[in-house]
Length: 177
Image (cartoon, rainbow, N blue to C red):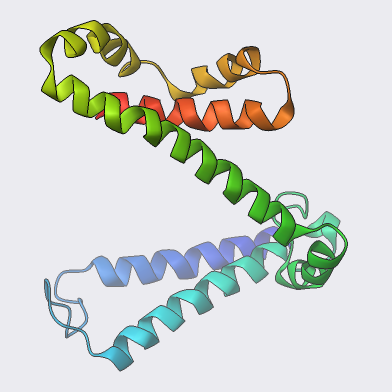
């Protein structure tokens, strides 16, 4: 894509923004919290998806060395469609999704098993709340990224490491509440 096309695109975009920003040029029917009929709502949603796909195509069309965005960063829509079947048949995408979902769900369940009773006890009994208060106060200011190396040192096998991370992340979220 040449520089002339990029400049032309910017000029068209800027002209549209300038026209819309002029007082009194707002489209009729734009009202705060107004009800939108289903057909118009569907049309506006379809328009957004169309614009999104158009921008995607525009950024990724042409030979790989002449694209605005390289294929490694953003493949074209057709490249994504061509990769869809091999992802499912050869690389086990659905199986990986189910395994990830199971890890996250198990980690959340383990954290909930600890955090919910502990929260009830802390709300009910002042000595228990005073005992765990330093952990709750410190946990509220610890970034969640800290739990990645912590989970690596706490467990050796691959699967428990991920469960330790998800459990500690959910416990961290409970401390933030």
